[in-house]
Image (cartoon, rainbow, N blue to C red; front, side):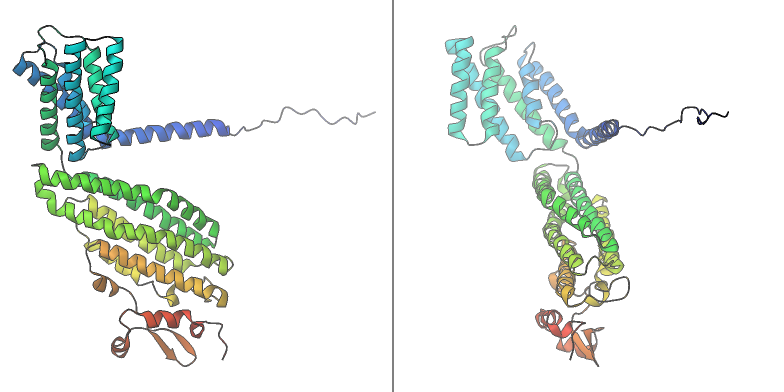
Length: 439
């Protein structure tokens, strides 16, 4: 009698996928390593200048004042130049004053009441209160208090005369300021780094909006809008700080004087670029509303326009990284982007249909907002508002039988075009331009 038991089979091999936790750890470590390398490359010059200032201050202080261990010169020089981001001259002067005041208070206290536990308490408290009375800056107060504390707790080296630390501090301050001015490097470097980060955020947002338009998924546009609201101001603030520092370097640093014109151009570039960043938030919101109104229809022509804007911003980013700032290619890309910016071009879906009554207003509003983005970017390259508007297709409304919509600009139309196109916009938004209009 045959057994009904099924034949024995060996164990079925299973493929185990990587654990999500391990994948997250691997990604985190990779990102940390990449960001660390980026920070190291970006701050190598600053750290190098701080190291040179500390070494020179130690050498010069020992040579001039014959101090055996003038460590205070090195400490002061390194603190003033700083570690990481560049400092503005106002901050350097502020820190120098704080250092000098703190050292003088510490020297005076050590000479009168000595050094010990209760003396440290008294000196640090008095130094901190005096600093808050003189200036509201936290940086100034920190330097006054910490330098007075260092004077109180560090032992007196052999051969150190009364007031010797003050002489070392003066030496460190002078050496730090000279090194900062002589080795500041190209002032455009800070501006280019801030501008590239700024434009990279704009590029990422435009790519996300293009993906949303091509797929009809408004969730992608919503995510891009949320991210832009959270981070856009940070990139603007970083560029403003870089402009301030570069402007001072081009004014005071011998190596930066020859770059003053380019510094001014990059400083002006932020004005139009910041308006473009603010405009981008509105564009993302308008696209979400438009895709919701048209029930998620795919709009590849709108996606192409957004990618053309991305290409133009890439050229802007490339222009600020070159030795000579030149916006010629960026303007060419912006002209291509501008050629899309009429409702006839942008508002047809992939089936060739224009939006109905429900989505017409949102679509026209999105088109107008994209035209504003083009003008902002063109003005960022140095064009006037009137010159920038010449890049845009006309919004003059012409009637041709039953069809109403924008037509190629003719001499007759140009003569009748409203100065600010206000009437044209009103005609576009009213029911007369609605494709579902019935007589």
